[in-house]
Length: 267
Image (cartoon, rainbow, N blue to C red):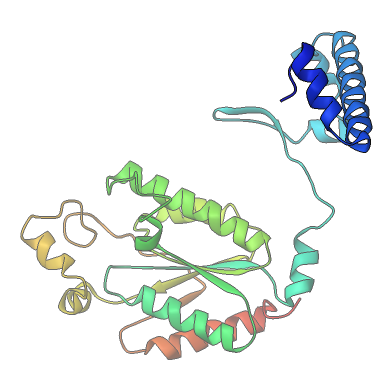
């Protein structure tokens, strides 16, 4: 840093002339920039009031303002690149395949088989597995009824984003309550929520018990476990149904055939 007085004079004298000229020019420009910014800020009017800010919103966006829950006075911002554009890029249509059923019914296995089958056909998918999501996004939620509802709501909202991106999202989770699954369906356009029910009897799931959870629930070490001390409400009307007599690969192919029939594997 350049000091002042005699020290500054000797320091500048020892520098080549081109350095001194460049330094002087730099300091002059820095000073002018500072003065310009200072005058600009001093002349600015006070920040607009909330009423003025509201009036500045284009009229075409007013109907999109949200008053839901705690997120009030926000406006949905549209982009020129929309879902249709992304679907054309990916050569597929975004949707969610919601696989529901008891623990041990084969949901995750079918989800992986389905993802692999679609991947081999050049289609982009993403799996939202119930256990995996609880490792991160939903790690703050328990298995009480209200937390289960919130768990499903969050996953549905994420699935909705994936579908809007043009991706085929595969959600695999127990989701035991019918009203929660129906609420998820209501988030999507007609046909974009494809419910797959793994209709496997409780005794078969309990005999499989791949994670040892039924054994812990029967011993009283896990509370509110679906099928043991918490109910599972089967879908009344689902798009696809699988059972213990159908292999995961066969079930995946059945769902893929459904997607082809409905036009989801092309843009």
